[in-house]
Image (cartoon, rainbow, N blue to C red):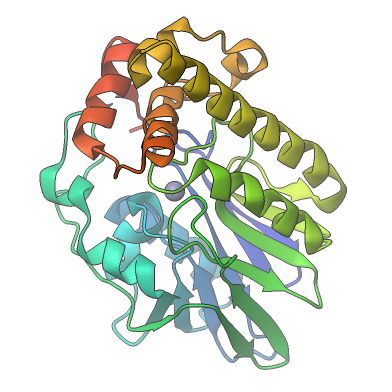
Length: 307
Ligand SMILES: [Zn+2]
């Protein structure tokens, strides 16, 4: 079931929200030049069909204004696999590490059978960014300004970027915020993701579009960030206890009580996040294949995926 819809956050600034934000159901966005000059798209979607729906909705909402630029908030396929659907004339930008990650994506290359049903990637083509930056970049859409900002460290991934509209005070966070679902940091850093929470709060946003889940009024962000902080501390503490007891990440996950986090979707991400926390504590790189296999084992089968 996909009841995706485009909502206008403030005039000319749109959020594409795909309920319920589980695996591969991301949010995206579109920011229009108020004088009709063109559109900046923020992320694409996991499949060609989903991206076509998103771009058709943007086209209808902006009177067919050209999509001049697109930014990828990070390397994950739910935010980048639809890049190839964008017009050839669209300039795609991202953090340099995101471009590298898109070009070296093991999920699309190996297609591990860990989600069910698997997303339809039969016609997906890799399209990395045309232009990259490592710190910050400002996009001007006529009178409208969009700042693309990297936190300065690895958080959800090495190349995270938020899109910030300083005049409208709208913040597109990418996957630094999961609203209603379990945060995922296995390809990033638990400590970095925790650190990013204060940075996100510092914008003083009036409107927040998370990477997954429903948009938030700015005054609701603090509680959501506090939940993320509690979850990341829970991951760090569970990893420390598990390592002290000689448990593997999946054994530590099984021994842990999810408590208040049990109600969030995709709870099996605890296994992936623990793999990252163990790796950080032990100075090891993540074994992605082993982490995904353990998450499936914990979950009792392939992970939930919407069609
Ligand atoms: Zn992500």
